[in-house]
Length: 375
Image (cartoon, rainbow, N blue to C red; front, side, top):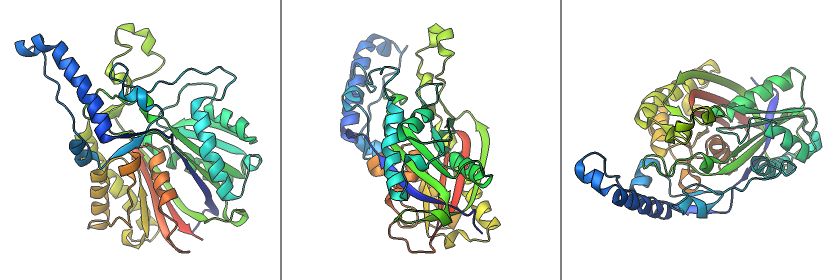
């Protein structure tokens, strides 16, 4: 079974700045110390709680992350700012997310043996987009010299598999021939670096995929045929960001912490583990494939503990690093980019005929799974 389509190229780009756990925790603890000193009287009176510090050991144990790339290290570590400083650009300048997307896209196109003029469909999909309109994808389309159409999509951390299935459906319907998916995840822009439970989670990265007919692939690299794609959503408020254009209409709450990423982590863990494992098991069963017959799983890179338990539930045993590689240690959680970074970095050793699964999951809840076979 095959869609007749394939992923023929991938690209990964990361900003040069890297923040280690030690650096991040030092900044966080300095801010905590200042806040506790400022609120010392209220803390002593019992009307305010003392803020706890963080530590590199806590971060590593909780997430498996040691470092992450960010667009502006200085701003993130400045306790008077604690967010990246990203200067506004003129309307006639390429926006920052488009810039990142183009960098990853050019790598993917080179691997696929294509250039921008071959592309006639562009989807820019990620957890958050810097503006509502015009579409950032249209900027990418123009910069690459692509034809056809382009649009943005929001599907949380599943913004890998959702656009891929849409590309497959569109190409099979005859409305496009060569599609490009880009995921410019500028996560540091909506991360809350003042929240002990999440200040360490995210990293910045951009990824890209080229999807086209497997028989017309022009690249010299590996070709991964798309055997199946399946999506599901089930509403949950447990991963949320309330930032949006209506915030200005309630000025007293416009800068509240809920306008950045927040989650109920334990609830997410409890919900997503069975949901993701059962979803992949169902898809593979419908294809007549046993989970242990898959050579590699490239999961959404959210948390090492989460992925370990998902794979244990799916396989009935612990997965090896070869079976389900994790790249969290050096990249952090890069939302939709994570599973593609894992796919990009950890597939070269697989032989022709190998089968793999890209599974992305996150806010929504939303889950998408793509079954692949190497030509």
